[in-house]
Length: 301
Ligand SMILES: Cc1cc2nc3c(=O)[nH]c(=O)nc-3n(C[C@H](O)[C@H](O)[C@H](O)COP(=O)(O)O)c2cc1C
Image 1 (tube, rainbow, N blue to C red):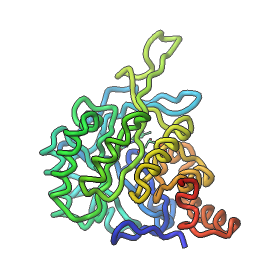
Image 2 (cartoon, rainbow, N blue to C red):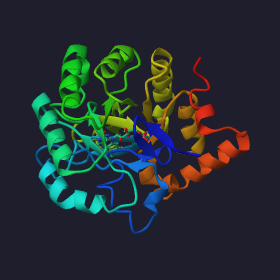
Image 3 (spheres, protein in one colour):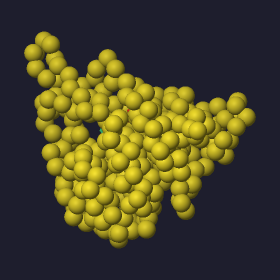
Image 4 (cartoon, protein in one colour):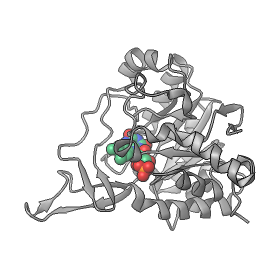
């Protein structure tokens, strides 16, 4: 009833944990039933181990969280050797998120993962606001973006998602590049560039001065972006990400056309909640006497 199919890959339901907000993916395996979820996305993997940015790199504001973690992770070698063997035994679909500093790095990372793992879905992170190289930079120029996407697409036939930075104005051109490069879905969106100030210390709250805002504040903006993109590309699958804290928020994204919905910051606030969302969505559909397919894109005309 809640199943979602993207090409030949089936997701048990549309609820996916977002990269960077669910650790390496297995830490909660003993405390919660991971098989409840449509999928999990472990922390973005880079070619080399990254220590991330200096502390403090998280600040809570009255309307959301700002992070400047900077893609801290153990690198691809450790992922393949240590993390993946644990992940592959979990009763849940794994989606690998990758990020490179150059086009060649993205290609190399993906080649390694395709060779060494059975992972069926890859989220290409083109949107981290917290790294000097790579990340958002590749999405700035549509020509560079297209070149990168085509080279990535050449590596594998497995499912590819492009996770773009939030952009209220130029998003359609970027998504057109994703569609025309033969990707399978676009992920909208990552965090929004933001800063905060500690008044007592008279300094920025984050060592790196700024980071990415997530949580409830960004939902209406990301919802707008998903709506605009679905209006322009009604048949192209969108994976929504931004500010989901309730089943109503999940439904909001589905009503404007999202196939899948990622849950991020909520996992830090109420880690148990993501596991009840699939049943809550089923209850909503039952109450409305509608199928998931019937409500998906209901508001897009
Ligand atoms: C602490 C933190 C770390 C994150 N790390 C990553 C990451 O490694 N890769 C990535 O693509 N997105 C990362 N994100 C972005 C989330 O995956 C998500 O797209 C974003 O936070 C918006 O969703 P939310 O409001 O539900 O958190 C991170 C977000 C937070 C809050």
